[in-house]
Image (cartoon, rainbow over all chains, first blue to last red):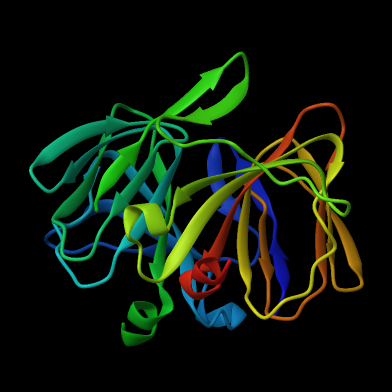
Length: 127
Length: 127
């Protein structure tokens, strides 16, 4: 169903009305949270949009999988491993991670590193 | 193929390396440009991410169609018609436009109104 999720910055923290913050901790992921902005809750049939935030010193797991990612950086600075390359990114930079590409996102500096990440709905229903 | 598109702000204008700015003018759309950030060029199989920018006084066409939109505002202020509702939005606000929902985006104020807009690849291949 169509809807608006209002953005709220509280003390410099990124939040959205009616969107919960989910932890994403594992032995391979550190200091990372995820917010599902558009997905199964909204009945989106084809894709999902999530916001990931990685705190200072944190990182996402080193991943390889069948689905792709469309990423746009919203805050902070990050270091992205993309296949054999390592690239620093900041606001507005776009990263396309194609299917079966090795990838990992790290926060660089003190400010949290936050980015939008789009995936196909097919994957989001499977997990 | 995996890739990075670097964001470049020139005199306050939003640009991305190797991404062209396309006009989007018609009798029903005014002062609107689009940049395809992720899509057929990158070989993305499932979705496309575009950046729309609407200049002061401009608007997108009043649309109804089968595909949905996932929208995140990046700059400026906009007024969104979403079904029977009209809502003002700014940085970070998320708009989900479900299939067959009436929608239109207008720039409010002097600064350009810019937003990311995700669509299913199926639609992007058809146009």
